[in-house]
Length: 115
Length: 111
Figure (cartoon, chains in turn orange, brown):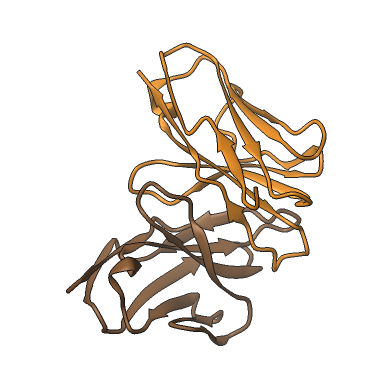
């Protein structure tokens, strides 16, 4: 497809469980971002990948959150021991990384509900 | 710290013009973005400003004043489909292009 895709679109889990959220960026985009959006709020930055490496993970709220991008394309956001406060829409974005004028293109998000 | 303010909600009439303001206080500045987000959907890119002045793109225009930490998005000839949230975001990190978003302005267009 032409855009950023994310799977699953919805995920319901129980408190304490482990979840994985997947992002397929636009083909050829070097940069990949994860954001989290709670109801009535703007997206909040979590982590940024440049290629395979996490160039900036300062937005990850704690060590229960981890993300990988092993081949520089698809990324997986992993959340251990989920808590009810983790419920949100998790957005992925990618960009071609042409400098600070880079435009980020967002996927449709994964709505995570922790019961 | 980073702080971006925009009105929570606005209402405007179909065919009219509406201006959505955004003020920001950030530790750096690489540019300001406006995104449109319909309920339950992904944010979609509308405009980008890095220099002072007005950028026009069809029915949408965006203005930036870096000295005042101020931007606005101007929507002309409003259509019902323009009902959405409008997100102001600043790119400010050195070496990281993360965006810091405001909470968004929910625009309702009424007949």
